[in-house]
Image (tube, rainbow, N blue to C red):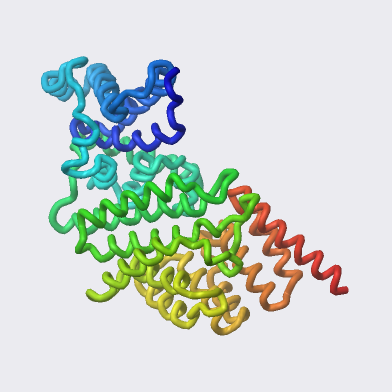
Length: 418
């Protein structure tokens, strides 16, 4: 009896197959349709026939045949279809063994870079990358961007249509556009990792498959661009952050704040590697946003306990980060660091300045932070209200349960103190 298809195999292969087709044919939107049909064929055939020796090669062959059929059906693209048909007769082309594809570069990374199409805005490039490479749903991407789902749906649809109408093949940015393209690639990887490390929806707090994929791609990017200090900083940030993952959840999957985590469970090897990477990057000039975030993560990871954390240094790094990044999440984290250094009221004063920014107020994190600082300040009634408000805005079930439990805990605490 053939072995069952591993649950995550098709998800891992999908972007690699799409990257191979786009790299050879172009036609991103049509290639995506062909890949989906190949994945469906694999899901139905492999359980009965067994997983082929080269699953990626099998998928690329099937998807290529289907893409040729789809191109043939598009009358407006008849010339390209005929060219493709001459180059690769249906049923005759067999893709090389999967291992041979890695010789030049990873197909997934190629797709990641090629999604930075010059016809698209940076926001659309990132959204399309997250959809095609990260496999995130539209609602997950919308939450990563802090925009409504309907807005992100329109953005992705327009992005695909723009690429289709441009008629131009995907190509790596050249000249001055290369730096901008690489910045978009780094941002896309960062967002994929963030969604994996702190899922915005669903029954689980984390999605290790996404964070692992982001780290894998960041390693490839760092290997291809060893002199790109921001690529180094990004990889360091991911490693230093992911090192805490084993201690972030309790037995029932509930979140455990950093201050309450068992630091002996943190991954010492990842911390060592991440610290070495960020230290190396910081030696060679003014730091960029990812290097600064990695430096902050390193301070947390190297602290023997929550009480021994060097909060003044973290405040200073966040203030540098605020100078180069207009990000409300950075401002929120800065407020927490200030509260830990100068007291909760100082942090609450900074939060007051963020109340008009819907990018952060619309989500749960702002209200959760305010609840925590209000509790530190001894205002339990206001803290309970903010915990409940945060719970109502949280997308993931573990966060909802945790925040509601915090509100209940304060009620019980006040009851026993009366």
